[in-house]
Image (tube, rainbow, N blue to C red):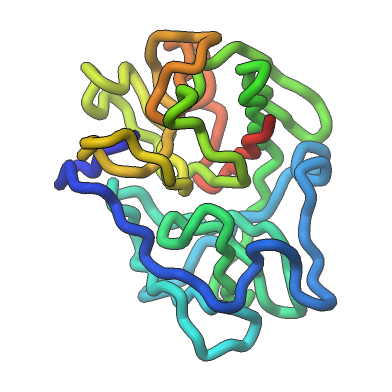
Amino acid sequence: MLHSSNSFAALAVAATVLAAWVAGSPPQAQASTPQTLYSVGSEVGVPHRGMTLLHAAPGSRHVLARIGPRTIFGSPIRLAVVGTTGEWLAVISAALGNRVRGFVHRSKVRLLHVPVSLEVDRTSRWLRVWRMGRVLRKFEIAVGALATPTPRGRFAITDKLWDFMPSIYGCCTLALSGHQTRLAPGWTGGDRLAIHAGSGIGRAVSNGCLRAAETDMRYLMELLPLGTQVVVHD
């Protein structure tokens, strides 16, 4: 799990949701599937200046979270888009639970296209890098142990960190929006998921993070922009 640069306390989920995209999509919504993500990429919202509000549903006054201009690790906020409903965008955010989506009005962000995405197979323990329907690279990784499995779901890269606590995370770290919901007893190192350099490649040995060889991590760090989506499945 990934520590904040300012604290080793667990990072709390910012909010829960009464009405959002947890088990399905709202009526008339257009949600992108993993297959669409791999074949054409996705959009990333770059918020305008100031605070960005994540609503519980399109047009709802219920605000799930208020997002500042930067992450807890200092990177500029990027909101990965997973679907649309009219002028509203369903987005991934580290401020929300793993399967909770917030909604942002299109006028509040500038949209960029990201042609790449990552696919992680927990069972086979490999990672694929997709770009517009083509696999650029495939390599083995370490995944969460039986007691602390890597959560399934759709996440986004929030930060690219070089030499961040290298004794733990190696050369480089891709912080993810996801949270580990099955922390090991006594663990105080935070609940944020990440992909980072480390040992145990090809095995289920981590606290939930994904580990890759240093050469593969350096490749990912150079290739992937913030907001790149990551799909974890069995």
